[in-house]
Length: 560
Image (cartoon, rainbow, N blue to C red; front, side):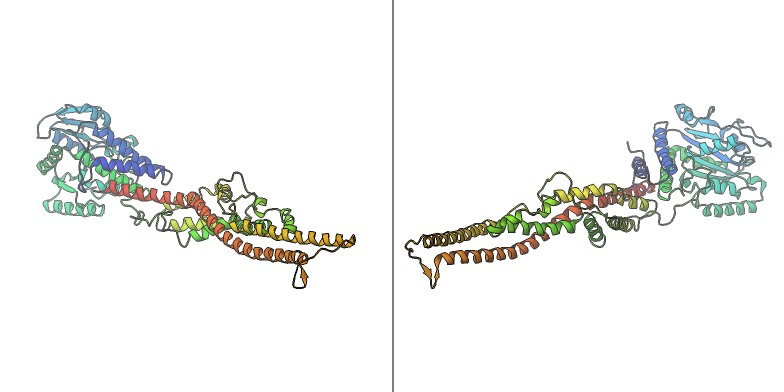
């Protein structure tokens, strides 16, 4: 059920929900005091909305000698409150009830055991409380005032001509309660003791003091409990508040706004919402503490794509030995190309050399299990990574106020301990494109074997001719190319052609190695970017999103 729409068109329920979420979002970022105060307001609102909404709890609060007990008696038409010259007179709060039906649970919650039913005055639904003196020499009296001032629906501050400018009431209560001006009345009592002109001057001076307190729009009434002057106006003001049956909701709206202000200001606006009463806190939030709309979050694709993502990924690549792996990709390509296309006579020698990638325990295919054998990052490389991460956190935190900025910077470093393993696994599992053997390798390998077969045929032919000559047998006819016999052409031409093809294949293998190294570098960079995104940028982005949500919730809770 939506309790009430405020002037901003936002229901009280929505404000309280926003305040509760803001308190949750601030957990671990702001001080526990302001968070607990905000949660206390939400809890108190839930309790108060479940009690009688047909009754309005109004507290008469004031200093010793202000005449609030006399005013209590006059308004209630009784002599319930003791009036005297001793200090303090009022030791415990008591209530006068106009129509007590259903008010019991509310008074139980307020913890006011002294209750009296009264009639008349057109104030049905009013619960008028006479509080102890806020400047009492008894600590228990002051604590009772603080407790009830924090929870009643409407506050009536009773001042007197002698002490209306007393700093104690202004600094301890009125100024911290500036947000509660809609549920507050100021009564200048005992005006019968002043000449008419002095009354006007006192009221004017009091209004100017209230304006300094942030209460320029609060209603001020001059009364005399002795002569009755001003009492009709005071009764009318109370009757208007009671008849609307909305003072309780207005009080909760003010409490929610004050609690949200405390969250926004880091504790400067805590008074008036619970334990902050009487703490002497200031009235406003620190200027600029909340930034309405921080820039795009880290990791959104734009914010750090330029100046920071490059240095960070570069430092991570060096720490992960990516340049070494890229070089190994080029060498492995050349090594395997030579083994596949080299001269068969010497090809077997290549196979005796270790494969550069396998030596690093990198197969270069997706899903390769286990760790690599790349060298661990040096102290200098780790320092470079740490510096790059700090720069990411510092840049992301620009424009974000403390302590949220500290949370953003901490988020950037929150997974530093996982980076080593994550980088190693990223390198091990990245497809480097070296498992696929180019088709020309097979073709050149076949050509080499054909050349080698021709060479061997020439060698066998020459050996057979030598054997015939050694046995002095008739020499068979031997075809020739010009003056050179075919056996010699096959032997020498095969050797020359094999070496030429092997050298040509080495050139192509070198070019192919460079191409594959570039592709491997791109693939490894993508994997490193993914690691940077998951372990550095995503936590920062999440913290900025959390702060932005906090700003939205606080803004909603403060809207009035």
